[in-house]
Length: 253
Image (cartoon, rainbow, N blue to C red; front, side):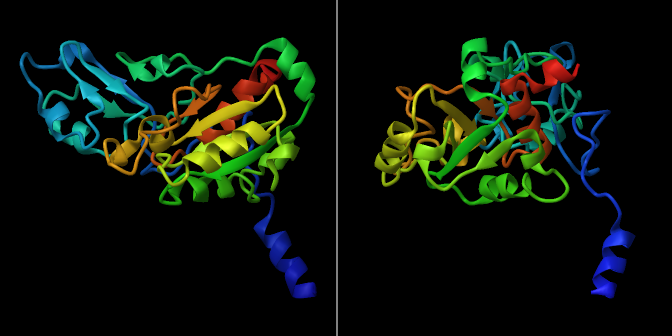
């Protein structure tokens, strides 16, 4: 026991200070892409041609964060540096259209309506639905509860039953075999319920878009309240999106 206490004392306080102060992920982290259409050479489509999910559009230059895998292929292919990945982890939006990036600024997620926030109080219980994903997003969601990110300190928890939840967090491209499970889980959550699309697969199908077994993300008749892009999204991106949805960052600022 004494050795355990010594080890714990040596480790010190490990929980990130998020959202206070700047957050710096690992050096290799690729965050918000910076788009500079002025640098885009005329008739150059190198970045769009190499994109594995067709997330890049030209004339004018735009990038769909909902389909982006955050791989470095476009950044490497562009000879003029019109696309560059920054270390900014803030990526979550409230609408699908806000994920279409055409410049250096993104319209970040706003808070839920005041009435809904009052009903939720200071806590948020979420049921996670893995709808055919590769477990990358699921692993990052699990990481949000570790000692580093400690999602629970903000009153946000994952629960086992949808009837105990305020909303669902969907990962994966929503395969045809998982569609009914997703719909039944959604219906089991008491209203007003929240839907959060996490990762490129849940938003657009990601690399599985167009596959026979894929529905290309959450069906359009299920309303989504928060989009968290990434492949997979970093825990800081998840935390930032959830707190923005709850108005937590507004209160703290």
